[in-house]
Figure (cartoon, one colour):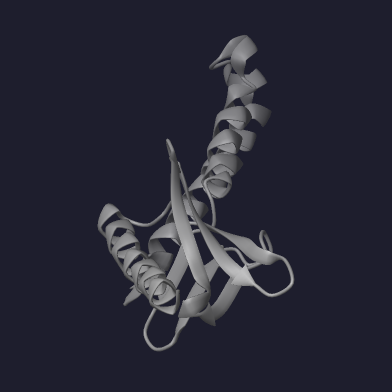
Length: 160
């Protein structure tokens, strides 16, 4: 199963550009505030509110998430639309190494934690930001990962 929100890059770029332009307009309005006196003592809000909105857009998480479970491996890719803000994540490992997963939903922020078996440390926890996935995409992701975890658990039971 493949899940990707790469087709929404243009929407995220538009939102990003709109927020940057609002911030630039806020800075311009702040500099001209003494001439028009629109907000009086609260003129700093022209800069603070757009800056908070822009920071929130990036703190919610990386915008682009791609998942591929076709074949014998699981592929996860997570990246930002602005390449220099965060380092992109890219992991590929065999399906049999997947131990468990957990999706944490904290208001606007959604994270996927994947536990993978490892020779050196026993297990490794991988973290992906899935805040920008739709509910249907998250449901499909859960279905696919449940299927892999169930298959792995059944194989472990057969070995015992």
